[in-house]
View (tube, helix red, strand yellow):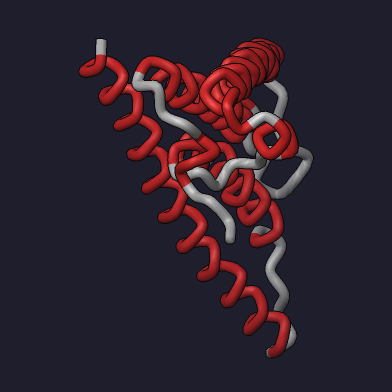
Length: 164
């Protein structure tokens, strides 16, 4: 069971690396657009590409952020009930798992509807919208796998990265 959990974590780690690469590559078209505007020839494609890349990076990085303690969390109950830390961490991970499943299922339904009906962006690229929408269920699935792996391995999101 632990090997399965480690494999689930490896998926989130790999998607985190992809997210970092996407965000890093995002700087190039933005830099190009800034230069192009400065010389009087603004682009029409950078805004759309930037939006899709930012969405992709954000959703693919969710599992990585949870594993490394950088996901959002509220620690007031941990402060009030320090002896119940493991229970509260498990409850938090179970809530995250449920939320991630909802995101994955609803995101998949949205992407499938866009694919079924041939919905495209109203831009110069005319992008089939199921392509950028597909990262939502992928990110949700990765987050669900990471939360489940942390539950199996009894890892605590509150201890992964404490703020001083």
